[in-house]
Image 1: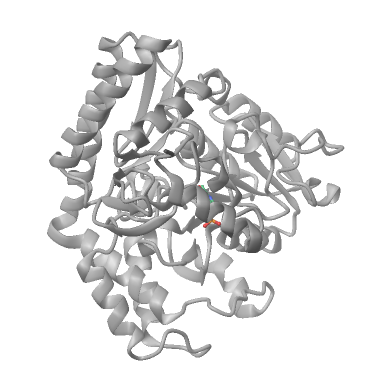
Image 2: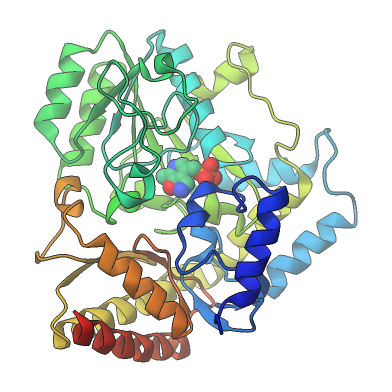
Length: 439
Ligand code: PMP
């Protein structure tokens, strides 16, 4: 009998009513089947077939406090007693805005929206309006949401299946239905290549409004910037009057409350944050320099959204900040420790079983890939990994009660502790032995 029968049946039923059966295309790729959830608590999730899993998917990143964190839930519940959204202003917006400007080194002002995609859209518009230029530079392997002007496809398992005809410019559209023209203002460069960046920015300085980058390439291998690369990017963009946008939708509130830009000690002009910022409620923000953000007050750039800054979302954001600020950020040290125990354990178990793998860790997020290399420090090498073997690994881990993303990125929350690590490593040991045996 199928172990996941209830989930399989529910997906069948969903397909009748919900286009594609799942609510976000990426979720369809889960093997052996997209799971349906009964409930979730702490670091754990229970599916409709009554299997319990330790959750390292964490809803693709937001659940920095784990599931159903009591103090977080209480604050949202309390906010709800006074209504969930007003279409009017309220104190929560001011308090969260104030906290963000205190926490994020580059933030003088913020603008709230609902998803990372929207925050990126707004940041790109601000950059165009501020500079009076139109082109955007982005990088292979990075992801900045699925809006028309930025969504491209790369040869990676997550996105290549969506790859559609190459646009005239040679840039591959992210999805069918995207206008050919929408990507015309995009220049795509290899990341971690200072010469390519300098050459392009020098050549096209009068056309480029923004350079947008993930500060750590979390979406493709959790790869760190080379020493000096982000400094160079800062220097060149300042020199040429180009807005530097760091997309911290993953790294914000994850590499520390102040995100990667605090950790690296570099101030971009704008940052986009989302995911972990509100712990699992729809909230994102653009934050940055007052003279750029001021374009919104001037009315030059429109900033719209029915549910922007709603009181549930701001209560959630404030609750996350409150929890993560306790004991001078001890939560981040604990998450780092948990993730390091995991990555060290996974490396040694896989090695002992003759499985060649690379694990790239950045605090409480890491990428595990099977690859015949000792390090993966660029997108081309990342593309050489054995993603089919990883998919099999992820499926076997699921049978062992551990939920991981099929693409290799693992997230750790404050709810994960030594108990979860030990259980997980025992599961990795069993799975590694099985995989090694049938390879
Ligand atoms: N930027 C980055 C770096 C992301 O990882 C994501 C989501 N994975 C987004 C933007 C888009 O965020 P959302 O899914 O909330 O629209």
